[in-house]
Length: 427
Ligand code: GLC
Image (cartoon, rainbow, N blue to C red; front, side):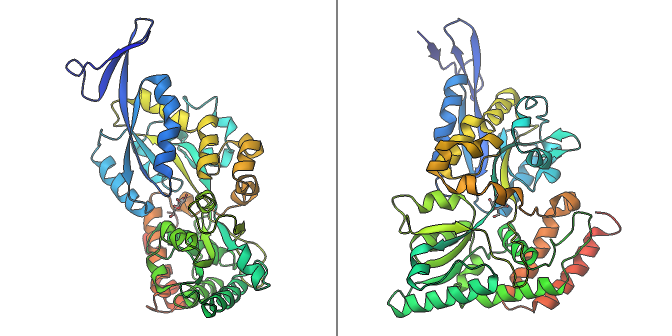
């Protein structure tokens, strides 16, 4: 018989004492984790944490953050600067490790046996000055979602270039509207002023031969003709194949339009794949995914590398249990569940050969090469300045998309601001 009791009077409010069959008293903590959820994330996570809760006696409490990674980062920075001990674990975007590293516990020792099972580049991206500051939970690389039924109906193929996408989106949208579907749009994506726009715009620029804003050696490359052309083309979409509202869209807004059946194409991350095929989706079974297009005359598609990792706060009062939960979230069991339930790309290499995952979410094995070739945002070369670099970039792009200045003017000005921020030869 397992006997447990709440010893609220004796223990801190966050802990209860469990008396195991062995007679050994174990402290059970309530572990608080902060993360911004999209889709069914909250529900899925709570389900996936259960085996860990049962095995350890601890419980997990979720603090839901804004879905915008930018807003989430702002909140994290405030909490961490204040050495907040209420949050034990932080779900951390792939780009944040260098900026938040000082606040996180080194997981190298705890992860030493399991780290080699993850893709080395992901472990490396979360390693700062030799310290593993976050455990990989899932990786991310976007797709071009397209409506198979509509392309077939109008005899169109999946676009290979952004120019072709522009033309096909317009043609199918106009034909569908003429046929009575007044709410149809050609292409939905993420145009809000936030990190998501940096991801989208990096893809247009990189796949058009315009570089990656700041190159891996630290050179500022964004002010060039190919980048100008790519962003001008995107500006032409607003109000034609994309609603004006796209300038305020994040991932979930684009998914909302797409999943009600009102878009021919969507740029989004793999999480939208499982949700789009759910029973409550109007596009269930009607779509497929392809790699994002390239600029005309260029042959390499670019997908921005995303992904989420879990970090343990240095200010947590329950570090041991928090580290244990972080390890569990990086485990095969957790990642497999998250892949099947949430169509999230695992970071454990062998899961790409897992038959259950492949049959539940066919995008996953197909997306291994896409994420392996994905383009990182310049968070490594610009280190602690990345957030400012990114916000200067998304602002320059957002201004262009909303008709405030041309791409040429805005990128020229951006280059000056980035040089200023860099402030010398190195970041
Ligand atoms: C996804 C990616 C993340 C990126 C964010 C932008 O969540 O995984 O890396 O920063 O989208 O909105």
